[in-house]
Length: 118
Picture: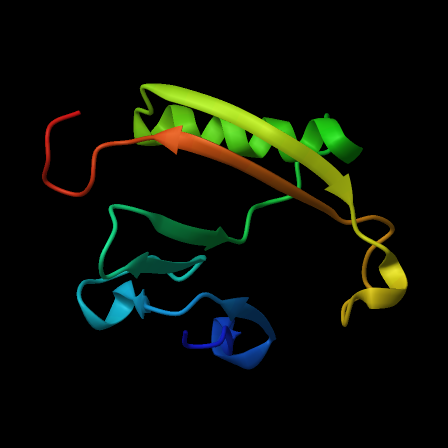
């Protein structure tokens, strides 16, 4: 089995460990500047890392949920499911001097792929 590999995101500002078989969608089609999109060559799954604008009216865990649900709404998701929301330890972040808190949300959205019906 091929090991996960570190992949630079947003011009090398940070990186993520990607599973074997992950393809960079920007090699296949245009991707917005605030997104990094990967798909798996053998499944119908994709991973999207998206930089989002600060929304001062929500904070902490609720901010993570707000953005996830908002993106689902914009994408026309048939379903939006939050599996977990966890705080990240600031000492583990390269950008720790720039933020007071950081969260990671794991979830699923059922969204039609580009040019396909829902």
